[in-house]
Image (cartoon, rainbow, N blue to C red; front, side, top):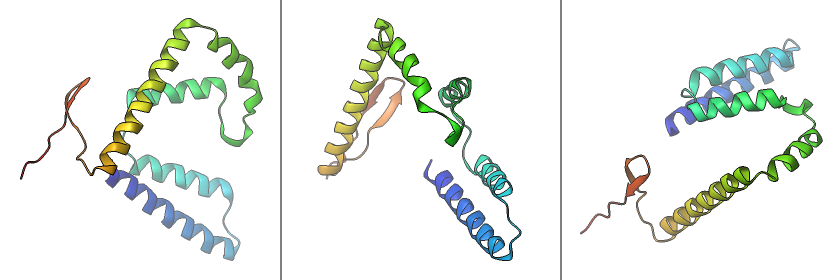
Length: 131
């Protein structure tokens, strides 16, 4: 949610300001600042959704660990997965849904329409206020 992101950004800003003042004194090191940022974001951000947790586990299994990751090692895996019909269907569905969302958001912003209100999983209704 927006409030959680705002809290996280404020927390990150205060940590960076403290690390800048510590750098001038010569006492800060990168690991302690990184740990402080990680802890602060963990406290500030909401609990990750189950799909975000699954994605994180997959990324860790594949070895995605920041700047030390070599993207070229994923090329053979992506090539192999892209040959699978099930993966192709899933990628097509995800691409279509993202396109629909982008188009919907663009049209809503152009015509200044309210965002949709979701009743339940998979269905939505847009409430347009009448004057």
